[in-house]
Amino acid sequence: MRPPQFGADITNQAAVMHCTRMAGRAIIRVVGRCTEAQENNNLDLSECQLMQVPDAVYHLMRHTALKGCNLSSNVITKLPPKFAVKFSLITDLNLARNQMSRLPDELADLNELIHLDISHNSFTTLPHAVYKMPKLVKLSAHNNYIIDVEVERLQEAPSLQEVDLQNNPLSARTHTALEAVTSPHILVSVREVEDWEDLTV
View 1 (cartoon, one colour):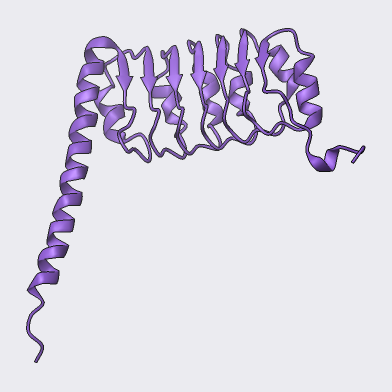
View 2: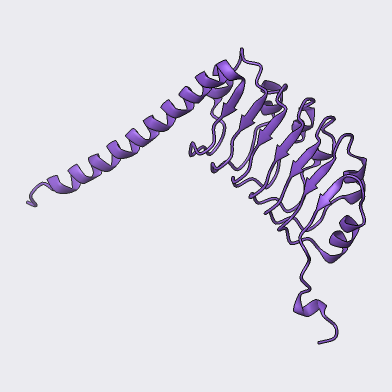
């Protein structure tokens, strides 16, 4: 018979306890920030290691008219459609530095939203919702993987004044079209011609 492996068991238990403590701290942090938001109407859940917005957050915030929501620097891949219903009065939404590639169309129902930050994510196109938000003034979408933009829809957006599309791999056609737009004000990086595009080589 092999002797019992006490060392391995203790190591595993320590690892489980460590993970549990970390998860516990994360939950305490989220609850604490929800409590703060009930007082100042600004929910800051940045750097909380979130993969999604926990259902408990919607529950804790159900009697609070949130004005701002900061979900930046997490590992969130998507928002549920109910986000727009639960937080319908927010004017500022920060989704920067996550792992999102799309937004639900229901976010177009954020009728009070003025500033949306989706920078440093994995978007390859601008989400359809941003073209429809009635009061959206500023859209920060820099540092993504955006290739194409529906330029005409961007120009027709109701309130849009500034769109930051810097540091995106925009196609030559899209880049040229965006540079010609006078309203809204669009920020794009100087486009470097790829070797295969330079016909003089």
